[in-house]
Amino acid sequence: MSRKRFRIVRRIFGLYLPLAAFLFFALFPFYWMLISSFKGNPELYNLQANRLWITHPTLEQFQELFARTAVLQWLWNSFFVSFLTSMISMTFGIMAGYALARLRFPGAQAFGLATFVTYLVPTTLIFIPLASVVQALGLSNSIWSLVVTYPTFLVPFCTWMLIAYFKSIPRDMEECAMIDGCGRIGAMVRIVLPMAIPGVVFSGMFSFTLSWNEFVYALTFISTTTHKTMSVAVPTELIRGDAYFWGELMAASLVGSVPVALLYSFFMDYFVSGLTAGALKG
Image (cartoon, rainbow, N blue to C red; front, side, top):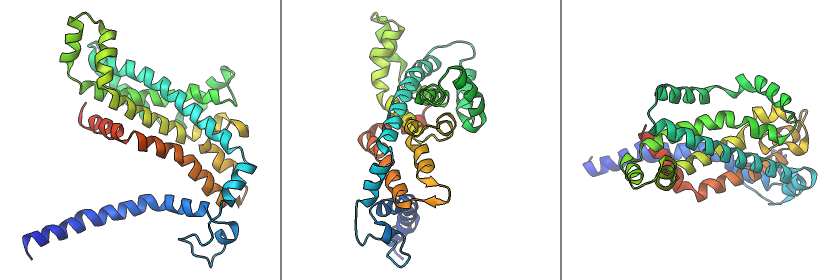
């Protein structure tokens, strides 16, 4: 076998086939969700029908979903909570990340490590004490309970990611700005933050996604149907006992995945840039 042919075979079996297998594994659930959303109930529950294709496409599932459920309210709740908590978390994450990356004070490294360890604490361990806090604040069964509790795991995440990104920015430009008359905050706002936009956007996107998909807190703190977010409303409102409304479940899952998909589509360049810097620096 020639060297050129050997390279082609190695590339096929070492790269393309594993990549194709991974893509199939990752994308098939979304394909199944998509085709199930556009099937009518007779076709959906017919075991003799083609399971991998749509014979008679219909919007029946979406019509039933929007007519019988408060899916638009769930979407708004998810967007409101995710956007607000992301903004709060990024604000505190930027300040904490900058301080830990740029300022020299005793215990800075230990505090940064403690921030990362705090993010690793599972939400299932702290939702009970947080429930007491939410009740004491009078926020039970309100979406504001999520706005208060989500930053407990989003702020450590944003801080840890931004520490790595701020460290990747040379100090020289910031020091030159301070020599020219800028204070510490002025140099951060005018010099460091514009250069850190990819890292900030990356942290914001991940924070938004974590908030959008969060389940434990939303299930614990909210019981009213119109106050629920998509992550909780879909499994709790569209599954009643042992009755599964598969068509509406798939349609609701598809609708709930669209905002996150659009977010990553528009900001993919920032996401890749921020992910690369966070992985290589620090």
